[in-house]
Image (cartoon, rainbow, N blue to C red):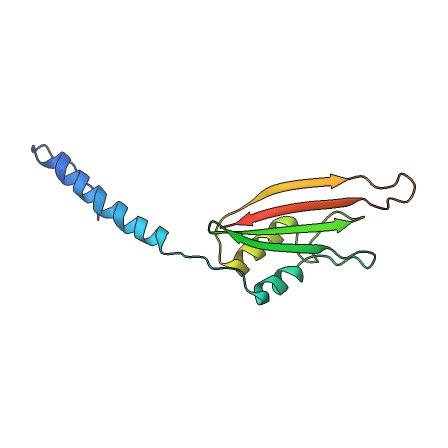
Length: 131
């Protein structure tokens, strides 16, 4: 459907009507995606994407709130990394694919220093949300 303006007095009304019809179709398409809580299978697929340090593997917290998935990853000693061949971007895109989402963002990032001599107690935390 194309939008056309003509010189007659009815054209603004017709154009608005056409615009309204198109916008309603788009809204129906946008609103048709309903996300449901993450399955255990999805959680396991996501965990396998991350590097598992032999010293201290990362811990995961998964939640679903207000139509968004939240994934928190905490790692001691090492910064949070994806397994080969994933880069940070391709790993996040893979998570979005697993969850069936088109959007994602980093919600929170934190780190704490450990012991000055042995680094015991250092930790890294990243939380992402997907929708």
